[in-house]
Length: 227
Length: 237
Image 1 (cartoon, rainbow over the protein chains, first blue to last red):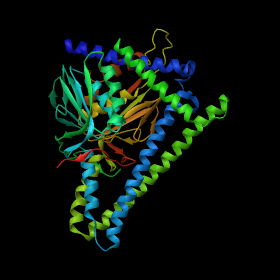
Image 2 (tube, each protein chain N blue to C red):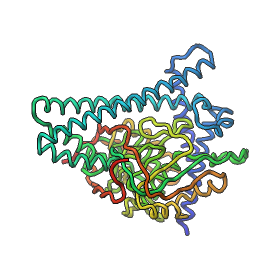
Image 3 (tube, rainbow over the protein chains, first blue to last red):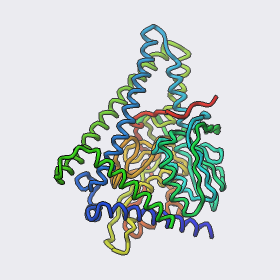
Image 4 (spheres, one colour):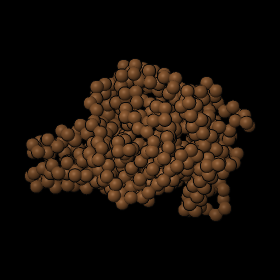
């Protein structure tokens, strides 16, 4: 089947890219990585470059967590203020509810971000890789050809098409991403550089993107509350 | 050609990042050992801070929740919103869950020490974890965790050097355990489908990389250990 061989070619290509990046890293850190890769990934066994990259990421994560504590403190103060005054602030609860609905793709959203045009077919893992690195760059909402994508949306290749949450989509693709364009751009560029081995990709920064499609939350059948 | 371009870009980024980091570190002059020690110490300090911040986030989440509970007792309007909020927290991964499911186990294989094979195919890459998580969602998973880190809508896997990071700087190391709640037989059928994870399965055969799964009548997943921030997206009304 032709799609099977395309799949294999694409997967081989991905492995080649991974391995070349690995090689490049290895070149940076010379022999250290080779002799130490078998050892558990403990700090003591790591080269300086890896440790430096880890420091960079930890700084970023900790800044995010500091912002989270600030937001939570503010929310708590707002709730307490109403309680102290003898009432209840349902708007403070509403605000959190809306935020979670945005995260879970249940409400239409708008904001700045990127519009990414992909002029040919791509494989499921290529879209996964792109979404993953855009999320890592702080992406808050996605749609592909008008359909909302959230973290738990299954992405599966069916021949030249992509099955996104069960819906079959075909090229050309338009991926809309809401988030800080400044942060998203480098992540999009890196994904594009991998994709551009086969298909044309163009990235545009936008000040106002609307994602109107929503996802209905699935009832839990097997999962029960509590550990 | 373009592969090469992407690789040089990646190399450039990696080098650039590393260079920035080295420059910004306060280092003792030209003492390699001291420098390495300083770097590792920074990581330890940052990881301590990371744990403390997560504990602080969880404490604040608990106070917010008690404020919400109290509000719900006082006002029926608040009660109504609170009920919806509780459901939404479960959807987003902010609640611990248990139920039937599968546990997938993954570990690195052995280095072939073959100069002709530089593929690093014998190690588990973050993309492998990402592929397994995606396949589990496609096979009907209701909730997933990797090494005790809950997969939430904002979760991204990535490399920081040789480290695989997920959710706010949590470092994952081998062996990897991916736990999913759902119908155990659908999940196992998905994992067993020869068309899925084909590349990982072939690496498992070639390099002895470990890939196995067991069905279970009860698996337990923790809640997400932090919260969400939405800074750019606004509800469209």
